[in-house]
Length: 531
Image (cartoon, rainbow, N blue to C red; front, side):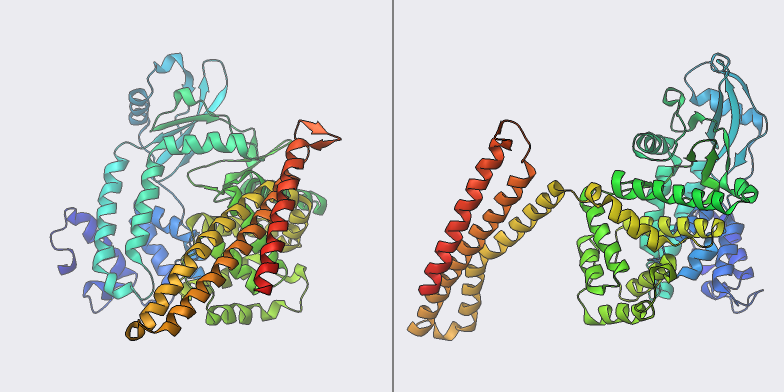
């Protein structure tokens, strides 16, 4: 108990120590013996989260989405965590709804079912009927849940500091708890899910339930009741191979369009969140969604091509551009990737399991201490979940083959000329800054190396010659870069009015500027050559 001296909620602490000791983790609390031998640590850890409930279940679910932070076997086990919360009393629920909806209930709802449709840690769901006869889903946040979660946040933060020395070699516990608290606070505020619902309704290829936002608050969500069944129930009735094949093709196509074209995707497409309707496929539960900008989508395309072509250098280039932190140019890192890719070099695409491959990449990334942006991890986990769901329905499904065909068919939508022009502009600015500073940087370097020979004419003459050389290099580089930029702009604005002989006047102007820049480049290059 010395570990928790001064902690406020001592009953919660006592329960935590009791559960941990029972599951074999007593050594962390100065307990020599435990009631259970740790034969499978990932299962014992899942049991701890399950018995503790509350925020611990949510933490386990978040960790199951982060194979970049913890080993895959822990992610797989923590995926089994279910939110089997205790339902709140109906009268208490009704009082809570009355308090949070700024209207008289009898003017909105004809009736609200007494028994909940589902009960989670944070909220419970009831079917209700509006005055106009429409059936809706009423999602209500449990009263006092914030207080319970605040106590668990305090306990988890305390643990992350106290257990830092025990676990720092394996995992950054402080960072995990900090991230968990941030995202769980969002989930406790239903306005975040409301915003996600609206975004997905606008952007997604899937059917997204209508939301009655005038009835929604930070504690209440009112949504359309879907006329369909969850994939969890419906997949048992799928008999025909053609039916199964068509379903996984539709699922994958919609998901790929969400990711690579709209840039908005569901972060956890497990069977319970997928609803099959008569003529459409719907998604529910939008606590967490992924959002990708155009640049990220184009770079992810590059990464997928690297996977398909088994090109490690291309994958590393793409990962670097995605904002991954760490030394991806390290030969040790690349060699480890190549070693893991060896088994795929001589096999067809239909034999490559994308989930297994991605897990290998995450394991290597974790080993080398490389950090990946959360949105990229969410995308990886989302695709892995979808692949697993599709293979369970239709075992012949292969994501890598489907991805290659999709990218081939939709590459023009994903990576437009305009996007590459913007990318090129960024590269031009980056290289421009580098070359502008080169002469001065070099001069400083020579001065440092020749501090004792400042009066030497040889050094001064060498410096002057090198400065002149770099001036020529700058002139060549900038004239050539302007030539390329104007050439790209010529293509981009080709059909924009006003037109002369079916060619845009803007396009003609940029073409002239491109030609002029190229002539300057040739002149400077020849002058430098004969100098």
